[in-house]
Length: 511
Image (cartoon, rainbow, N blue to C red):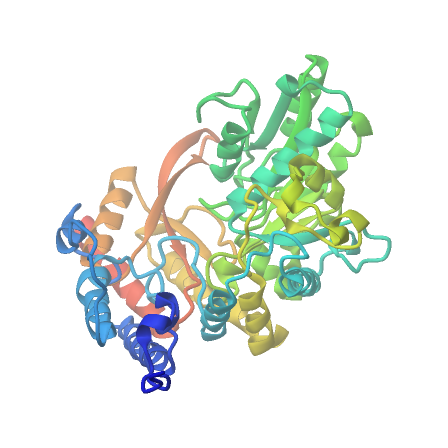
């Protein structure tokens, strides 16, 4: 017998996927990506925020068909080169310190490392049994976060007599859908017909509420108002609590079934805060059997509750049935990470529980464990809690509070500039890190200002259109400029550049 080749390494015997994990290859890949990542992050200060590309430009640089063979030896040189030459030129740089267009998309080194570790584990945490660590780490992170934001015990797994708890959803849009399904299921169990269900939210609420109604079959189009009620707002653009109660009462008298009220603590357009405490008290006046589920969308502003002085954003949260806050917006945790709490977890899981034979196991049937598959629409779920764990441990409560406070202080600097500039006016009161303003005069000047600033590409702003009362008290649609301060690396020099860009554009718009 010829044993001459028994000690010879034969790559053909190694599974093809595992070859990429051989030590030299793995370390080379990590080094190449790390060097590129550091270079990219350092370059953000000098880059234009938005790309100068036309539709199809990126497609034109990508091959029409996939490669038959892999890149071969040393593929990372060409892969990183293509990142730099194909992908980067087509990016809007959300991590730029001069990106003020939308609410931030948080990032941090520990968040990135957590995402990396999650990818290495690559587990599916659909059941406790499929990854006990994934489930129990997430449970603990939800309780840690409840403490960070000063939430009542009713939302905690470890709260006294609590039947609540929370999970990490992908986005606030998923959270409001889960809340709607839970609220509807609760009414169905009371004997109410699904075809009578109605949903209530502010006319200034995020579009995700209407989208959730469409997905759940309560609206056919975004314009369908047969079972979706957009409640009018007051002068601060917050939901009118009295109008909400009247709408609910009218629907009950008409034989309809209110199943969800969704408030917003920090609207996308202007950062308005719905009067949650008043709404909660009003809902308590309805009989239990007719009271709708109260969901609180605090996706952006809720992060500020990490600071005790800003916990007013959650005043009245004790009345809520569910709540969501997104660390991926303003708490240094990479996208996606939406914290979603419920007061009664069984009300939620009843709405999405389906258990085929292959998901039956002893632990689940004992009732001793949490199976997160029943907390949202997807069956499978990644290990999102790792990055949140890393972020909280790395920065601590003090670091997270400083992060929020620093950004609010920078927003105050820009707010002061707007107030002092006679050609500008605040459209609404500053809301935490969001400043909304417009050019004195008609909407045309504000539109031109936004166009001028964004064409320069040194900073990026966005706009919205909201009803603002004029001197006669008549609400008229007004274009306003949104400046959302919250990018991870934003500093005083970036606010100074923003001020310079606005000033320069003003000189062109107003001759």
